[in-house]
Image (cartoon, rainbow over all chains, first blue to last red; front, side, top):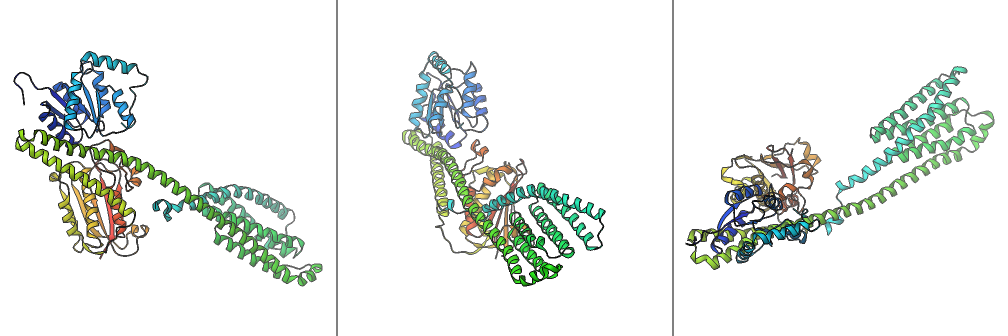
Length: 154
Length: 461
């Protein structure tokens, strides 16, 4: 689906559920016309990031090894990835999970199930936020008291 | 919920332990004190025998008996410290009865049946009380009978000093009745107290167990809700997602990719149905509403159909070696559907929790008559068949084994891994096995590579 004038953007999906990887990747390729790279755990996700420098990442929370929040923190800690759009896509439904996700510095916290078009929209929205804007938002978050502490169920 | 109100006999074992602890603590305190008191008497007797050596030889025997009793109190003290409650209580009971009998026998055979002896009847009661507090019911009855016999012995065989002879003779029936009745009075009192105590203990214990169980169930339920929530959201998203992608972009897609999405949608639907039906199965079996008529079941046939049902996606089954050893006449008395469900569960767990390439062993052999577990497992003495499913995977940490067959249990490491499950599989296995009069348990060292072995015993034909 490469358009003539522009290379498709790369989206990196990190989820340990194979079904989800297949579905989300199909949604992004066919509905969003993105190029998709997949990883099935946090460590792999981190490695893939440095290989493909994606335009946006979609990250699950509960994964073996490095979990989603740890991955987000690792990415935010590195200047290279500090302003990469990050979206958490998880089945963890409780409020404190959501708070912990946002506090960790992600752009969006999406609760499964998410319809493919909604996911594509969320990615577009996240990509549209400028780096400067994101940096400002993260700075505000960091100043909020105790915001970046552990999520309850991680 | 009926499960909460019912307290299994095995759980009541705790009460026996409470009572053991109580007796142990009492013995620990009483034995040394009584030992010291008797030791003082023993020293006095030593001095007495040295200063005025008696002519009657049996007094030396009595003296030696006192020495034995002091030693026995020592044994009791020591045993109590080493938590050996029966040895401790038994030694103290024997020592005190024997010491009292020795002292009074010595007196009766040298001084005669005088007021000292008659008031001494109270000491016999003391021995009974002591045994009643420290020992079990049979010990109380034995001690009372012993004291009865000794009372009768005293009244018949003790010397009767001239002045007292008439008195004793005149009141003989009264003395006998009073002595014996008083002893039984104490015995009955003590037995009743012990019984009432046990009952109270049991009532309080039942409440405590029910409470703890309810609490645990609540925890498990929360864990289950979280787990099911997680397990539901993934297939729903896959199902919904695939359908929507196909709807929006299906026509423009290469047919191969369309097929993949159809397969995904179908698989997600299957997963949802499986999740729902295992929740319902567990619920139905919990309520005991699911009856079946037992029949002769061939293990081999059931194994074959179970292998056909295994999900080929799990654990790269193609790469596995499966060693099967099934006895020629391996048939059980039960329900083929339930047996199949157990086997599917155990085999798919073995696949899920052991790395690709490692072998899985399946054996179904009769349990030898001499097997010790046969008795301890409490299943009656009918011949049994034992099915073992062994893998060489992660194993199960020993401290997590007791929880394994509970409803909604998932090991902490599974929650953080990609192994899927709803925490119901093994619970269902247990319920199915029990419904067929069988037992199921697991043996594992928890060392990675040693794997685990699930044992299932069922009535054999």
